[in-house]
Image (cartoon, rainbow, N blue to C red; front, side, top):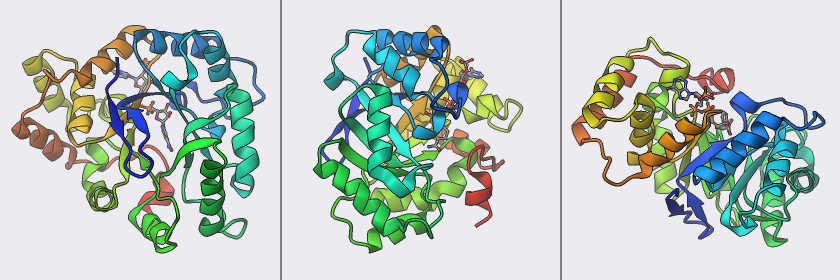
Length: 293
Ligand code: NDP
């Protein structure tokens, strides 16, 4: 079973490893029919011990996740569910209600602004955040946070003196973006904003010939784990919650085993991964918006 950590601003408990329903499962259209493979995979994830599901209005997968939730027997309050708003940011309350309907639940554990790169002429960050806060007050969501926020966006948000501080910042985080994220990570730590690392397996999935490959293989052998497990552990050791996914039950099981406290990487090995990752800057998502500013 997945371990949990407590989010400082809301006292909500969140499982350390989340099952993502974007990327591989992305359809981008909430009117699409149910994806039976995703329903089965969510059932696999729950049955091997995942208790944390990551969704977003943008993914077009919530109807399938809702179907998976309706057709299993774990109680709602044992599953941590996140969704995110972006497309319908001008009407956050309705966006949330629609998400709840598609998922077939009456609250979300975590509700995020998917990215800061929305049209500020349509809604200001201040107004958007106030709308997010109202949903906590009305009980539709337990905690609120952000995703893909860079330091300047968080500074903008904290300068508004929000009633409720962002509990998390969900960002792409693997060795090839670690160096570029150091300042942001330090800022989040100073503000008690937990990091959720998405695409933690980036070096295996996007850059299998990249400079971290050799050390990941070497450490996998040394610790008798897979390179994917080494990457997940690297993120966990940095203090991050990780959001991963797989269509393969065996891999899902392996990923969960990285929370095993008997599996640790030495400081030296963590640094070797940092150093190898620093040789390449590669970001898969929101590249134009983040790296060109
Ligand atoms: P990961 O880096 O964990 O990659 C998961 C993918 O890796 C799966 O497609 C899996 O495929 C594949 N994989 C697993 N093991 C290996 C291996 N050994 N070698 C090669 N490929 C492997 O995460 P994702 O990038 O998929 O993102 C996870 C989740 O994070 C998303 O689903 C979404 O919920 C969230 N996310 C959020 C974003 C945001 O803007 N907030 C942006 C992107 C993602 P297989 O099925 O074959 O195992």
